[in-house]
Length: 77
Image (tube, rainbow, N blue to C red; front, side):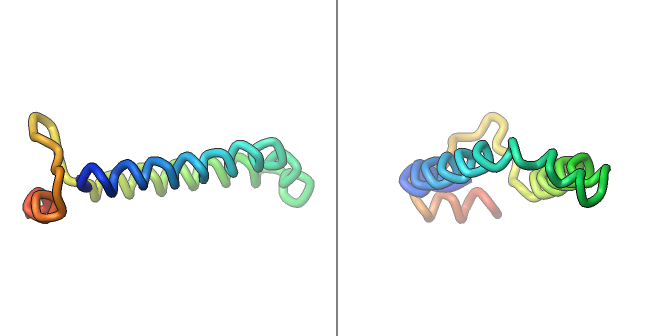
């Protein structure tokens, strides 16, 4: 969906966010001290939002992924 150069930068940024998530994940059960089902609601809501946002992505099955910004713009049309 994005050109190769932008895509590789995005992978690096998302890897950093994943590491932050891995550091914070052990503390999520502590949220249950405020409201018992809060950890389950947090993970469920985030999963639901991610699933709904994925519906906005363009279909790329059997298509060549773009290498330039112009190709990426053309893919969305």
